[in-house]
Amino acid sequence: MENIDLDIRWYDELDSTNTEAARISESLGCMTVLAARYQTAGRGQRGNVWKASRGENLTFSIFLRFRTPGQQDPKDRLPGTLPAASQFRISQIATAAQCIFLERHGIEAMVKWPNDIYCGDRKISGMLVENSLCGTFVNTSVIGIGLNVNQTVFPEDLPNPVSMSLISGKRYCLETLLEEFTLIFKDCLNMLHAPGDALMKQYESKLYRAGKESLFINLCDRPAYLPANPLMTGNIKGGDSGKIFRGTICGVSDSGMLRIRLADGRIREFGFKEIAYII
Image (cartoon, rainbow, N blue to C red; front, side, top):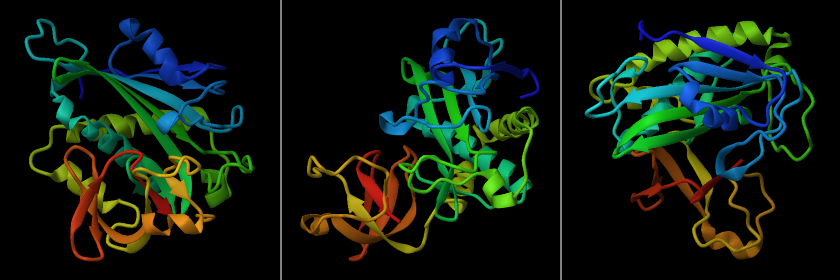
């Protein structure tokens, strides 16, 4: 990706870095990074709100442009095209970069499908990827990442947060960390069109709870009082016991579906909002 230049822009405050990237997308070059010291309306997966203390964490979005078939001027775009059916590869690239980044700081990290980053059973990072398409190909991508860095006290309604500081006992310079991460991310982009299943193998090697029998809850046709939450920590009502099941994560499909081997040996695939982990 030598022909793509990094452009990191810091803001004291934004509603959301993803929202800002969408607003000014026409003026953004590939690999522009918008970072906010505070977000007033940070967004996460499934319409969740991303909460982060002012000036304590990394909240940023990376903007990418892709080539599309028949394009006359491929300048300032990533090499190669990316079919819409393969857009989950963007999430795989971003999670790989986060795991590499954290491990360089001595922090072991795993990917809780589809794209949260966990340290043990605690969440250190979340991500929201928003893509635009041109026909059946990805045209642009905004990769929003919230990484807990220096924050050590979290709202009580967050069930299992952790930060780099809580793990290491250190405090970090956010600007330095972001520069380091973007260089790692740019290097990981070289895996986007890697031959074979190299990227999938890398992703599955870091998959949280893979190969370990665990409890899950099937959220398909769930009762109205049961939230579509990607994490459950208990308090499941007795009447929902039929929706709780044991299974073993055995991988992810090319389109990003979670593959789980059930107790009877069958393999079932689940999409977003269809399954929750019980932790």
